[in-house]
Length: 212
Length: 221
Image (cartoon, rainbow over all chains, first blue to last red; front, side):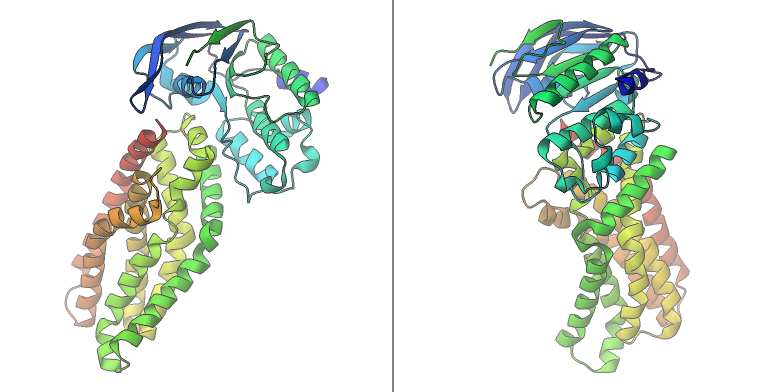
């Protein structure tokens, strides 16, 4: 567990203390995905985002990250400027992990850690038991190992808000448990998590259901 | 700064490996430059007359090759999302991506350009000017091409669309560079053409990233 302690040392300078969604609505391709969705998330809280396929979970996460524009409503990050908060206050881990198949895990982890403003990625690689795999090309990793690499990238550069899109799906039972521990550590250190899930999320203190 | 250097290193490495990288671009360039004399006929006078022009147009075409993947691969695999989620403005990110593209394919092509032109019968004194024009022109091709690549994100057959968007934007540098080289060969003042080429490249470098970033944001949302 010592790796956990190292990871929880300190969150980034820009700490989001409060995430608020007010009456948000998103329209994709002319179709209204959802409307009047509200959420109030404080430091140390995790929210499970549930709903059937196509109900807009991914779009909601991307809207919080500022990648999708809202049709109505607004999203605020406490008293932080949204551009700054999104710049280095949050991590997004989705299905498309941005890892280049032809590069080695080490090259990718090193680049993304630097890009996200993190320092040393050794502790993160240890925590996700990737150290022995770092010299493999990303294409040689299994889906679960690849997801662990994406999670290591997230741990290596501490940021307050984690936006996770079905984080558990490619992971086996042991790693699901391990990820829950890592999430709990993050929450205990004042972090926040918004995760789209189909299975129950043990660390979630609240849930938000989107209906199709 | 460390962030941008890391990105430049990655972009250059990716562009180097993208679709075979500079070797394929240079090979394509050599192929086009060899096909032209086959179509036009082997008389040295006739070839020498079109040598610079042919080498220059072939360069513009070869610059198109790897543009298609400049943003598309990052768009498809989600890396563009993560590149956006950074304190670095997306405009600067696009600038660095195009710079990497230029370093990895524009510079090798610029080195090949004098060789191709000399092979077609251009005078030896012209070689430095061809190299200079190709370097500057390559910068314009990379940054104007980036706009096309960003605009065609998410489209089917994005590569073809990129070419259709970008080729008209390639016209001014082709005219300015071709004009400069032509004047040089005929003993006329040629600096004006080179200056215009430089101005166009500078405008592309300054304005291109703004358009690319807007197009990327639009594609992501």
